[in-house]
Image (cartoon, rainbow, N blue to C red):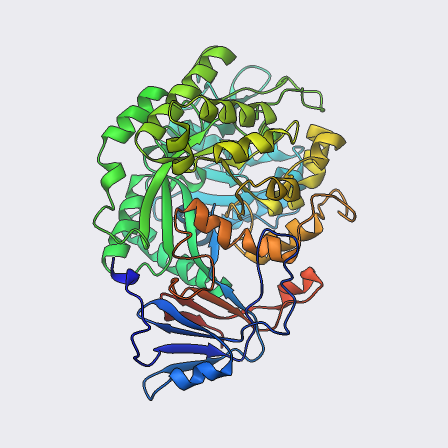
Length: 571
């Protein structure tokens, strides 16, 4: 691996950052990220690795060829690692879709769609409408918008899509469309399709959309890479690329996107470090057969000639259930709002809960036997526990622990299951910004008690679970600072989080965006910490950390460094 050679052979440093502060991060709540006195202030780097950490004396390692960066009192962090960021979907929703994220009414959504220019294929593609903001009244008006132009509009969660009547006509999705296991087909009173599709049913729409041109994908990926570096992001996990990615938001997460990422890495144009989870069947309908066929295909070995510290196919994404707002998350208790969904269910192949649980165990067993990691989307407490039980039942507990399977999002009826997760080596990747933005809606759907118990971050850390915070972009902003603030304050749209026991310290939250994601990546010996011999991946903020975490939003990234190379510098 070209980036594994350490410096420190007596040669001058190639890059030195000085005049800043390297904070103490860690899941131990005793760490104080805002402490400045006595902390290191400089980092030296050569050959892509950190060679020395200390104070101003490191400037003695410079010669005429050394680049020197003055952090001017700012904080020097390990590079931010977003362990759950849909890179392809984020790039395409940002650069190939009409933006609806900030729309405040369905009338505003329709007005923007009416004014938008179609893409080269004649479609209006939009993304970002948010039911938590807009409600449902008025959504039916999208069906009749642009009667001569097909319109497709993905929601902010990535689990729903709406299309107008012309799109339904072109896709031949009329009255006889059957229900989809693991999904929701919206219908009018007469049984005809109303244009709303959720979870596994999104495939009906996405399979009929014209594909993006490869050059369009490539250019959007490079633009979004620059945007992430501007935020200080150096690593990420794209949780779902492959044939099933066609069902995800923007219909842009399928195999061509994975191939383009691989080409960018081979061409030296991928400056991010990217881990990928393969997705074989999409947001619903996964089976042991689809996973077996996917593992036997060429996809797991697609990037085997690429440095795994640059691009790595880490494992397989499995959608165990859907999301609460669609009524497709699987809970022990019924939803609080009157609806026909009851408890929800697993969205895997099967005709009963027992069948689907058996399918779940067979899927996990195949992924584990292949020596790969399973990242499992589970948003209901019953789905989370079914995953834990499936991992606990694997024949080789030590091998399963080495593979580092992890739950994505997660919900817990009882925090005692966290101890089981720690014993089994199961990680936990979750998204504080989603809880923050959708708090009021989740409170109505789940009830106050279950809502307060969402994301037991402090308890999980205390019990030894590997917890990673992530954005889930494009569901929320890729700005990691918002995730940290949400985890530390626990403020949501349902109200302030003062006094909540699951609040984190800044040191814990920052460790969950650097150190734990490195563990999730099987790369804790290479990144996530500022230590000698580690990859020279750094994020330098303009100012030191404030005791008031909200001040992070006023503390932009000054420099982003990957492998000792400056990939972003502010102004």
